[in-house]
Image 1: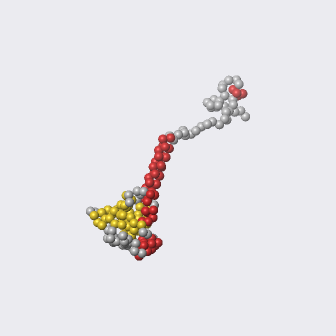
Image 2: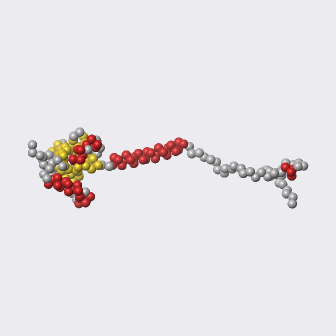
Image 3: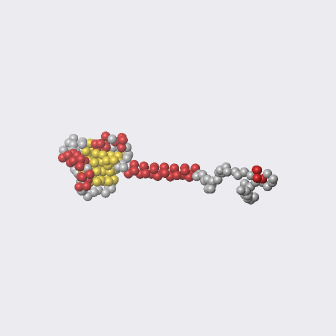
Length: 184
């Protein structure tokens, strides 16, 4: 059988007397990439890392600032150096005879387990606020004084259910007469 070579084929033998002897078919695989290679520029990766880092920082900062620690007055005074100027909540009993209102501010003492702190409260007072009751004040220490801008007074059973031991301790503290000023 005679093979007829297509003269227009890229592997066609050169014309001439020895054309049949020199005709070889090259079957070597070729590197052919159908799509051009694109390199992602490094600024895109850097931008992605910066955006993800920024989101993580915002989340961590936001969650840390949203956390308001809860202390009894005696625990807060013992941990005063650790608390610094962070915003915290203090629980205690309003000492009878210490509530003074002056020009939009209410000053009083808050006591728990024989530890007392001066509180300077600015802002709205709850209707149930009065001496000799357990309250939670929210704010920051400013020297030896606690600057409060929010007062929470127990007024429903939700707080009782969530914090039974805190309520029990506050009642015990109040019943033992620690909500009045000690005699000089």
